[in-house]
Image (cartoon, one colour):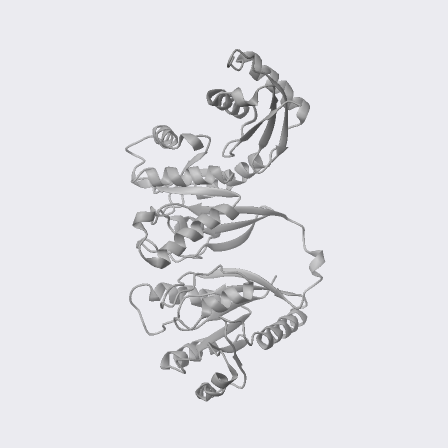
Length: 444
């Protein structure tokens, strides 16, 4: 196991900037507004041959008990419990504030190795201007600038020393003896705000990993949780709710939408979560189109089904939903309730099946026999007095399944015939939830 290190501090001291700096890319949203980070945000980094898991937490306001603050506080407490070390970030520009003393009193109760970082120190002169922090009774501070990358080396080296010391004390074996498990399945939850994405992931994880609130827009960053599910390493990704561009209010929510779109790009299978009462919208159809265009596996999750199941059958709702997303009508539809837990495990099982469909490879000889039957049942229509034939087919790749079709006149093959080929392939081989790519080339 990689040591888990939590970054803790009051709002707007630069925790997310330090998080981004250490993991090497801009994963957390950083904005000069208190309270941007609410959930725990996980990332990984390596230094001097030692791997770490880093956790960015929300702004700690121990005394506040209104709004999001109790939820954030709970997330921070969970993070500190699971962490091997804690980085306590202080603001070198603001100096020491009463909240810093309150936070330190709480941190010391956990008896974890503490690294005290004074951030926003852009020069050696500023470093000399911060003596008041020694009033906390701390021997060692790390003065640095997370924004500019100044002064990180000492902090990193001491974390590596601490990590290796903990390895010896814990008697960890050779990392090479760890069981090999399949990697690479990244499952994302996307959809409009307040459809229950975080609640579903919490159910799957069996813990309150995400902050859940009935206020739209609680989740702003894309949050990763890695789990071992039946011998597979699976990354669950919760994302910010997607809205139409005209509905995006403020720069931070704009970042959230961009984060969700990037999440679709790096996911393997994407669950489009919709609210059963609201039904599928034009925005949902646009998201589905984006998922298919990106070549990702797709599953439609109808959440809050317990609220309307007595007024409509699953068959009727499934038909209505798929008619609204004709470009993704091959997607499985699952009816769930994050509130009651109904069918939650079915999401994971279905996503793994979709992953299997995405990675399907069909042997060339078998594939060409299939196409002979497809062509005999319905020939391509004559175009411009020319007889159109498909002579040979092979599968170029998977993820998504991509087929090269060699024809004497590829430019004359009609769209309806391409659709017929795709539907025929799905009847024969399944490909449920997996987009299919058909590439037509001139026979050489």
